[in-house]
Length: 233
Image (cartoon, rainbow, N blue to C red; front, side, top):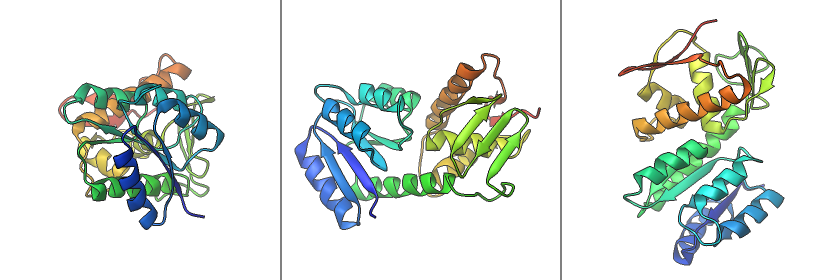
């Protein structure tokens, strides 16, 4: 079955144009022109990935993402206007996996969608460097790649695809410093440009999620000017 992409934007010209491009690539596409109808549609029938505009009637993209994240870890790409840096960062903190600035190249959007879907599939399969069964255990941390689950001290930590891959990249080599470029490659793949602040926003959200399970969580260390590392137990 073809993978399903949900497009949510109040600009019908964008919806029609992007829908035609994606369908030509073999994807099944569902479109929504406002946040409320998108929320109802995606909760009743989830998609494999969603592309959300930020400024929409009846529920903006930020609220829609927040509501979706209560029920789903579906990969999400945000569409944001050229000068909306604050919106980009807020979207990442709410759990978006990626963002693209308008006006955008449809080829770029297609590449980002392909990359996210590949990462989503890969994160659920046995990965290189993992013991048999796709389980990575580091002290109180257990990552199961086949089930895409993260457990810390017995509690479930709900991670998006990008967050899961970042935690894996850090935890698989405890004590080793990973700079932002290495983390970008691990989470987004090579030849995908992502601003450094994107990684910083993801790490902040990851820490927040772990601290909802354990208020004392401090395993992910920041080495200012260098990158991040997962502390050895």
